[in-house]
Length: 143
Length: 165
Figure 1 (tube, each protein chain N blue to C red):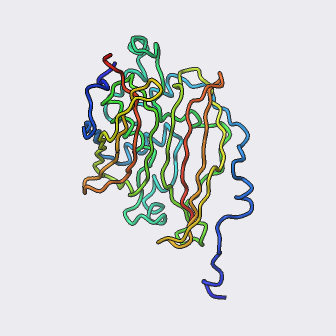
Figure 2 (cartoon, rainbow over the protein chains, first blue to last red; figure 1 turned 180 degrees about the vertical axis):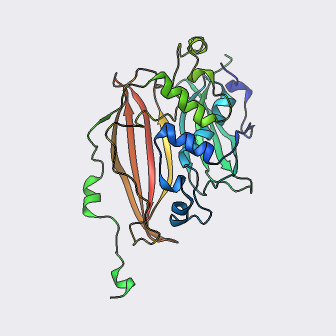
Figure 3 (spheres, chains in turn yellow, brown; figure 1 turned 30 degrees about the vertical axis):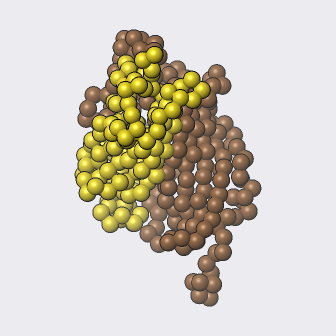
Protein backbone atom coordinates (compact mmCIF):
# COMPACT_ATOMS: atom_id res chain seq x y z
CA UNK A 1 0.00 0.00 0.00
CA UNK A 2 1.32 3.43 -0.91
CA UNK A 3 1.20 5.95 1.89
CA UNK A 4 3.33 8.75 0.49
CA UNK A 5 3.65 10.17 -3.01
CA UNK A 6 6.69 11.95 -4.40
CA UNK A 7 4.73 15.14 -5.14
CA UNK A 8 3.51 15.37 -1.55
CA UNK A 9 6.89 15.60 0.19
CA UNK A 10 9.45 18.38 0.29
CA UNK A 11 13.01 18.88 1.46
CA UNK A 12 12.99 19.57 5.19
CA UNK A 13 10.03 17.31 5.96
CA UNK A 14 10.52 15.11 9.02
CA UNK A 15 8.99 11.64 9.01
CA UNK A 16 7.37 9.87 11.98
CA UNK A 17 9.73 8.11 14.37
CA UNK A 18 9.86 4.43 15.33
CA UNK A 19 10.37 4.13 19.09
CA UNK A 20 11.54 1.13 21.13
CA UNK A 21 12.81 0.64 24.65
CA UNK A 22 15.22 -2.23 24.30
CA UNK A 23 16.53 -4.87 26.67
CA UNK A 24 17.25 -8.60 26.68
CA UNK A 25 13.68 -9.40 25.53
CA UNK A 26 14.40 -7.62 22.25
CA UNK A 27 18.05 -8.60 21.92
CA UNK A 28 17.42 -12.28 22.61
CA UNK A 29 14.64 -12.44 20.03
CA UNK A 30 16.87 -10.79 17.49
CA UNK A 31 19.74 -13.12 18.39
CA UNK A 32 17.39 -16.05 17.85
CA UNK A 33 16.43 -15.06 14.29
CA UNK A 34 19.82 -13.71 13.23
CA UNK A 35 21.81 -16.46 14.98
CA UNK A 36 23.67 -13.67 16.74
CA UNK A 37 24.53 -15.22 20.08
CA UNK A 38 27.56 -13.12 20.89
CA UNK A 39 28.67 -12.85 24.51
CA UNK A 40 28.85 -9.05 24.54
CA UNK A 41 25.11 -8.96 23.76
CA UNK A 42 24.19 -11.61 26.32
CA UNK A 43 26.42 -11.30 29.35
CA UNK A 44 27.19 -8.20 31.42
CA UNK A 45 30.71 -9.36 32.33
CA UNK A 46 31.54 -9.92 28.68
CA UNK A 47 30.13 -6.50 27.83
CA UNK A 48 32.34 -4.91 30.51
CA UNK A 49 35.36 -6.81 29.22
CA UNK A 50 34.46 -5.51 25.77
CA UNK A 51 34.83 -1.96 27.03
CA UNK A 52 31.25 -1.07 27.98
CA UNK A 53 31.14 -0.29 31.71
CA UNK A 54 27.37 -0.83 31.83
CA UNK A 55 27.65 -4.45 30.66
CA UNK A 56 25.90 -6.20 27.77
CA UNK A 57 24.72 -3.99 24.93
CA UNK A 58 22.44 -4.18 21.91
CA UNK A 59 23.22 -5.20 18.36
CA UNK A 60 23.89 -2.59 15.69
CA UNK A 61 21.93 -4.74 13.26
CA UNK A 62 18.80 -4.40 15.40
CA UNK A 63 19.05 -0.62 15.28
CA UNK A 64 19.51 -1.03 11.52
CA UNK A 65 16.20 -2.88 11.44
CA UNK A 66 14.52 -0.14 13.47
CA UNK A 67 15.63 2.43 10.90
CA UNK A 68 14.14 0.29 8.15
CA UNK A 69 10.93 -0.07 10.16
CA UNK A 70 10.65 3.71 10.39
CA UNK A 71 11.10 4.12 6.63
CA UNK A 72 8.62 1.33 5.88
CA UNK A 73 5.97 2.67 8.26
CA UNK A 74 6.27 6.09 6.66
CA UNK A 75 6.49 5.20 2.98
CA UNK A 76 4.29 2.12 2.94
CA UNK A 77 4.92 -1.49 2.04
CA UNK A 78 5.39 -0.84 -1.66
CA UNK A 79 7.82 2.06 -1.67
CA UNK A 80 11.28 0.79 -2.61
CA UNK A 81 14.24 1.31 -0.33
CA UNK A 82 17.20 1.67 -2.69
CA UNK A 83 20.09 2.36 -0.34
CA UNK A 84 20.75 2.86 3.35
CA UNK A 85 23.83 3.68 5.38
CA UNK A 86 24.56 4.12 9.08
CA UNK A 87 27.57 4.53 11.32
CA UNK A 88 27.69 3.09 14.82
CA UNK A 89 28.60 6.10 16.97
CA UNK A 90 27.29 5.07 20.39
CA UNK A 91 26.26 1.92 22.20
CA UNK A 92 22.65 0.79 22.68
CA UNK A 93 22.58 0.29 26.45
CA UNK A 94 20.09 -1.94 28.24
CA UNK A 95 16.72 -0.15 28.73
CA UNK A 96 17.62 2.67 26.34
CA UNK A 97 14.62 4.32 24.70
CA UNK A 98 15.58 4.45 21.03
CA UNK A 99 13.85 6.93 18.75
CA UNK A 100 14.59 6.85 15.05
CA UNK A 101 14.56 10.11 13.10
CA UNK A 102 14.36 10.90 9.41
CA UNK A 103 14.43 14.18 7.50
CA UNK A 104 14.23 14.66 3.75
CA UNK A 105 17.36 16.33 2.40
CA UNK A 106 16.96 15.88 -1.36
CA UNK A 107 14.37 15.09 -4.04
CA UNK A 108 15.28 14.09 -7.57
CA UNK A 109 14.07 12.07 -10.54
CA UNK A 110 16.71 9.77 -11.94
CA UNK A 111 16.39 6.96 -14.49
CA UNK A 112 12.63 7.22 -14.25
CA UNK A 113 12.58 6.84 -10.48
CA UNK A 114 11.33 9.46 -8.03
CA UNK A 115 13.94 9.42 -5.30
CA UNK A 116 14.07 11.07 -1.91
CA UNK A 117 17.16 11.09 0.25
CA UNK A 118 16.76 11.28 4.00
CA UNK A 119 19.16 11.98 6.82
CA UNK A 120 18.44 9.30 9.43
CA UNK A 121 19.54 8.53 12.97
CA UNK A 122 18.70 6.55 16.09
CA UNK A 123 18.56 8.83 19.12
CA UNK A 124 18.73 7.62 22.70
CA UNK A 125 16.79 9.09 25.64
CA UNK A 126 19.65 11.55 26.29
CA UNK A 127 19.30 13.03 22.81
CA UNK A 128 22.51 11.43 21.60
CA UNK A 129 22.61 10.24 18.00
CA UNK A 130 23.79 6.62 18.00
CA UNK A 131 23.56 5.73 14.31
CA UNK A 132 23.69 8.66 11.88
CA UNK A 133 23.30 7.86 8.23
CA UNK A 134 21.15 8.26 5.16
CA UNK A 135 18.55 6.43 3.13
CA UNK A 136 17.36 6.70 -0.46
CA UNK A 137 13.80 5.63 -1.24
CA UNK A 138 11.89 5.51 -4.53
CA UNK A 139 8.39 6.89 -4.03
CA UNK A 140 5.39 6.48 -6.32
CA UNK A 141 4.17 9.45 -8.34
CA UNK A 142 0.61 10.76 -8.60
CA UNK A 143 1.22 11.40 -12.32
CA UNK B 1 62.17 -3.47 24.58
CA UNK B 2 59.71 -0.68 25.23
CA UNK B 3 56.06 -0.74 24.18
CA UNK B 4 56.79 2.05 21.70
CA UNK B 5 59.53 0.01 20.08
CA UNK B 6 57.18 -2.98 19.81
CA UNK B 7 54.32 -1.00 18.26
CA UNK B 8 53.70 -1.89 14.60
CA UNK B 9 54.20 0.80 11.98
CA UNK B 10 51.42 -0.58 9.79
CA UNK B 11 48.37 -2.80 10.27
CA UNK B 12 48.18 -3.65 6.58
CA UNK B 13 49.78 -7.05 6.37
CA UNK B 14 50.87 -8.70 3.14
CA UNK B 15 48.03 -11.20 3.54
CA UNK B 16 45.56 -8.32 3.77
CA UNK B 17 47.07 -6.64 0.69
CA UNK B 18 46.80 -9.91 -1.19
CA UNK B 19 43.12 -10.24 -0.25
CA UNK B 20 42.09 -6.89 -1.76
CA UNK B 21 39.30 -7.36 -4.34
CA UNK B 22 39.66 -11.14 -4.23
CA UNK B 23 36.14 -12.59 -3.98
CA UNK B 24 35.51 -15.55 -1.73
CA UNK B 25 34.10 -18.86 -2.83
CA UNK B 26 30.28 -18.65 -2.92
CA UNK B 27 28.30 -19.45 0.18
CA UNK B 28 24.80 -20.75 -0.56
CA UNK B 29 21.84 -20.35 1.82
CA UNK B 30 19.20 -22.90 2.63
CA UNK B 31 15.90 -22.11 0.88
CA UNK B 32 14.13 -19.22 2.58
CA UNK B 33 11.05 -20.39 4.46
CA UNK B 34 7.85 -18.46 5.25
CA UNK B 35 8.48 -19.01 8.96
CA UNK B 36 11.97 -17.52 8.72
CA UNK B 37 10.40 -14.29 7.50
CA UNK B 38 7.55 -14.27 10.03
CA UNK B 39 9.88 -14.87 12.97
CA UNK B 40 12.33 -12.23 11.72
CA UNK B 41 9.55 -9.65 11.40
CA UNK B 42 8.24 -10.45 14.88
CA UNK B 43 11.73 -10.00 16.37
CA UNK B 44 12.42 -6.61 14.79
CA UNK B 45 8.96 -5.23 15.63
CA UNK B 46 8.67 -6.83 19.08
CA UNK B 47 6.30 -6.41 20.91
CA UNK B 48 4.25 -4.87 18.07
CA UNK B 49 2.51 -6.82 15.33
CA UNK B 50 4.77 -6.80 12.25
CA UNK B 51 3.57 -5.74 8.78
CA UNK B 52 1.33 -8.30 7.06
CA UNK B 53 3.52 -8.15 3.94
CA UNK B 54 5.99 -10.42 5.75
CA UNK B 55 3.60 -13.09 7.05
CA UNK B 56 0.06 -12.85 5.59
CA UNK B 57 -0.03 -14.38 2.11
CA UNK B 58 -3.60 -13.23 1.41
CA UNK B 59 -2.68 -9.61 2.13
CA UNK B 60 0.67 -9.86 0.35
CA UNK B 61 -1.12 -11.05 -2.84
CA UNK B 62 -2.99 -7.74 -2.95
CA UNK B 63 0.27 -5.76 -3.12
CA UNK B 64 2.44 -5.15 -6.17
CA UNK B 65 4.66 -8.01 -4.99
CA UNK B 66 1.82 -10.56 -5.41
CA UNK B 67 3.10 -12.49 -2.42
CA UNK B 68 5.17 -12.42 0.75
CA UNK B 69 8.61 -10.83 0.58
CA UNK B 70 11.39 -10.58 3.15
CA UNK B 71 12.24 -7.46 5.11
CA UNK B 72 15.20 -5.83 3.36
CA UNK B 73 17.47 -6.49 6.35
CA UNK B 74 16.59 -10.22 6.52
CA UNK B 75 19.58 -12.57 6.78
CA UNK B 76 19.07 -15.90 4.95
CA UNK B 77 22.43 -17.20 6.16
CA UNK B 78 21.49 -17.48 9.84
CA UNK B 79 21.57 -20.96 11.36
CA UNK B 80 23.97 -22.92 9.13
CA UNK B 81 24.09 -26.62 9.96
CA UNK B 82 27.88 -26.55 10.00
CA UNK B 83 28.76 -24.10 12.73
CA UNK B 84 31.61 -21.62 12.76
CA UNK B 85 33.87 -21.84 15.78
CA UNK B 86 32.34 -20.44 18.98
CA UNK B 87 33.12 -16.80 19.44
CA UNK B 88 34.55 -16.77 22.96
CA UNK B 89 34.67 -13.49 24.89
CA UNK B 90 37.80 -11.54 24.00
CA UNK B 91 40.22 -10.49 26.71
CA UNK B 92 39.88 -6.90 27.89
CA UNK B 93 43.51 -6.04 27.10
CA UNK B 94 44.52 -6.64 23.52
CA UNK B 95 47.50 -5.56 21.49
CA UNK B 96 47.54 -2.94 18.76
CA UNK B 97 45.85 -4.38 15.69
CA UNK B 98 43.80 -6.87 17.72
CA UNK B 99 41.15 -4.34 18.82
CA UNK B 100 38.29 -3.57 16.51
CA UNK B 101 34.96 -1.79 16.25
CA UNK B 102 32.13 -1.97 13.75
CA UNK B 103 32.26 1.39 12.00
CA UNK B 104 29.03 1.11 10.08
CA UNK B 105 27.60 -0.16 6.84
CA UNK B 106 26.03 0.85 3.55
CA UNK B 107 23.56 -1.37 1.72
CA UNK B 108 22.17 -1.14 -1.79
CA UNK B 109 19.21 -3.23 -2.84
CA UNK B 110 18.06 -5.09 -5.91
CA UNK B 111 15.25 -7.63 -6.17
CA UNK B 112 13.42 -8.73 -3.03
CA UNK B 113 13.97 -12.05 -1.27
CA UNK B 114 10.90 -14.32 -1.36
CA UNK B 115 10.03 -17.66 0.25
CA UNK B 116 11.78 -20.47 -1.62
CA UNK B 117 14.68 -18.30 -2.74
CA UNK B 118 18.22 -19.62 -2.43
CA UNK B 119 20.74 -16.84 -1.93
CA UNK B 120 24.40 -16.94 -2.90
CA UNK B 121 26.90 -14.74 -1.09
CA UNK B 122 30.40 -13.68 -2.00
CA UNK B 123 32.70 -11.52 0.08
CA UNK B 124 35.76 -9.41 -0.63
CA UNK B 125 37.86 -6.77 1.06
CA UNK B 126 37.27 -3.79 -1.23
CA UNK B 127 39.16 -0.95 0.44
CA UNK B 128 41.73 -0.40 3.16
CA UNK B 129 42.96 2.87 4.53
CA UNK B 130 45.30 3.51 7.44
CA UNK B 131 45.81 6.65 9.45
CA UNK B 132 46.81 7.82 12.91
CA UNK B 133 43.86 9.13 14.90
CA UNK B 134 42.67 9.42 18.46
CA UNK B 135 42.87 5.62 18.76
CA UNK B 136 46.46 5.63 17.52
CA UNK B 137 47.38 3.71 14.40
CA UNK B 138 44.03 2.75 12.89
CA UNK B 139 43.03 0.65 9.90
CA UNK B 140 39.68 1.20 8.20
CA UNK B 141 38.88 -1.99 6.32
CA UNK B 142 35.85 -2.10 4.00
CA UNK B 143 34.39 -5.49 3.22
CA UNK B 144 31.64 -6.04 0.66
CA UNK B 145 29.16 -8.91 0.87
CA UNK B 146 27.20 -9.32 -2.36
CA UNK B 147 24.08 -11.47 -2.65
CA UNK B 148 22.39 -12.89 -5.73
CA UNK B 149 19.37 -15.19 -5.98
CA UNK B 150 18.92 -18.52 -7.77
CA UNK B 151 18.18 -16.62 -11.02
CA UNK B 152 21.45 -14.72 -10.77
CA UNK B 153 19.62 -11.49 -9.96
CA UNK B 154 21.29 -8.93 -7.72
CA UNK B 155 19.68 -8.90 -4.26
CA UNK B 156 21.86 -6.85 -1.97
CA UNK B 157 25.31 -5.43 -1.38
CA UNK B 158 26.56 -4.56 2.07
CA UNK B 159 29.82 -2.69 2.53
CA UNK B 160 30.89 -2.76 6.19
CA UNK B 161 33.73 -0.81 7.72
CA UNK B 162 35.85 -2.45 10.41
CA UNK B 163 37.90 -0.07 12.53
CA UNK B 164 41.00 -1.93 13.65
CA UNK B 165 43.41 -0.31 16.10
